[in-house]
Length: 128
Image (tube, rainbow, N blue to C red):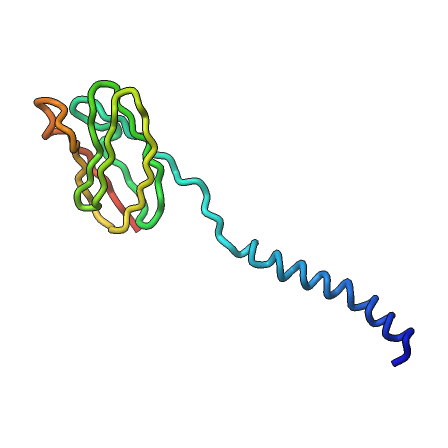
């Protein structure tokens, strides 16, 4: 090839090469699943109940449990899922929770909060 033909070949192929590089470098970004912020579930503890009394979550999905109480210390304890988070009066707290088992689980208060302590329960439904 003469010098003129080589230059023409380079000029013609350069845009295609650049387009290929751009596509290859941005391609995976479109395929990659970026995790969104975890869904927030507000749970309020008070003598001797939780609001809400039941929640439904999905296995393997991470949730931000926004825990609060106004009266005395409580905790949200789900023994079967090895989860326990303390709730202090006037100090809301965000705790990440990722259930790994499907089923219906009893949550209770893990901090003695008075005579009705044993009745302070809620149900956590974990679905696929």
